[in-house]
Length: 473
Ligand SMILES: Cc1cc2nc3c(=O)[nH]c(=O)nc-3n(C[C@H](O)[C@H](O)[C@H](O)COP(=O)(O)OP(=O)(O)OC[C@H]3O[C@@H](n4cnc5c(N)ncnc54)[C@H](O)[C@@H]3O)c2cc1C
Image 1 (cartoon, rainbow, N blue to C red):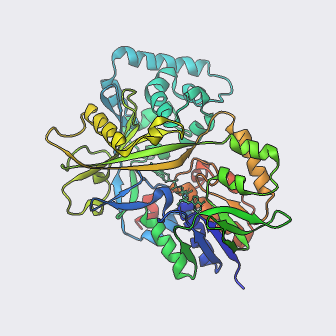
Image 2: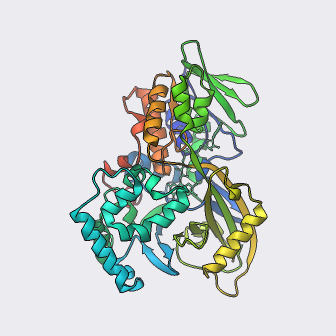
Image 3: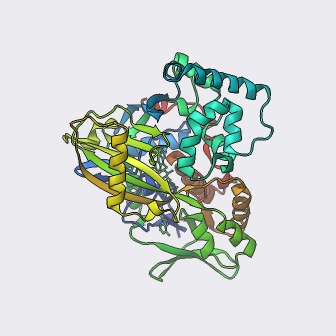
């Protein structure tokens, strides 16, 4: 008889795992709490157009991930020329940073300070940097840190950069040095292998969520089930702590040979039995940051060319604006309006998290007008607010100690596979969650020894190849 695997959550990690397992003949059942497939990477209809949950660029050098993308999307994608800029000091700076652009937009004194601080830190770097601030300062110097990293990071995380773990920088900025950035600024991205400098990406024509909708269809075509509106309360265990299934919020039990969980790690731990007190305490120290998205429909079509803009300016609360007109034409079809989306971040206890839709829409309109991004004659004709709880696992200094205690404990529980962005408390992009899903399946099918906790952005540096190479052949 085929082994049965229950998967909690139909986001990228859950459905990619189900895709691989159902291909191998496992009986797959996915239980998703929301009415949607795709999790944070879903796409949805809004005012007759398609949009994503904020900007969703898909990029990976990992062949397994690109094969998954290609199998599901085939040639139904657009290669998007990425344009993303930073808005700061009432000026647009290119992102990735372009030297000429920086030189022409900053006062001479600031440029001098940048170079001076850079040389200073190269001669005398901070020993053993443990915080984001120290790590970035070591890499780029104090002045560049203050201009291009501090404000945005503090808006996003809601804590000072001196309290953000260096892990976040190490994962996200990786080996990008000032020299690499300068080289890219001078000669473009030719031959440059760094992810943050890649200037083209493949985007599914009808929204990023199509990848996951098709993966869910694939599971069903292979005999699996995907249940929506089925929130899972907890995983259930036998007397030896072995996982034997799940309990749904409606109180019913579903038995399985294995459970793959992409529900928030903290909630998973709360539901387990016989968890030692120190593990419960460690899990309680892990926390998340929420996202508030305000979508605005503007009755004009040429607002700005960027896919998204990072808004560093401290005078506004939002941190990023997406323009959905600049992704694929299938998103808007014949419509002569543009949907933009402003992102705000908050903790549960912040007033903005419980603010009314009206308040948030008014705030977004006020802030977009402050930035003067819309043509004068343009009007905002619609607004829509979306709240995404537990969006970002917060890498506060010391989090690693608590997380590894939880990881070690969960490793002792047989038949349980926690993966995904909030499922494993890793700041995953889609590609990392997909890879976790595919490798968790590999572990179940072939018993591979891979440590799923180790999957993070490092993985994509193991293999060369660009999405273009893989997809355009
Ligand atoms: C604003 C924003 C911008 C982003 N930009 C990018 C980008 O440019 N590029 C990129 O690659 N990635 C981006 N991401 C990240 C990307 O969305 C995530 O990496 C990806 O969605 C993570 O997939 P996942 O399956 O791990 O988790 P999720 O997408 O969170 O999926 C988890 C699923 O589990 C379900 N679930 C939770 N609890 C339960 C329960 N108790 N019972 C049943 N189901 C449950 C949830 O409803 C959800 O559907 C962005 C995310 C956001 C929010």
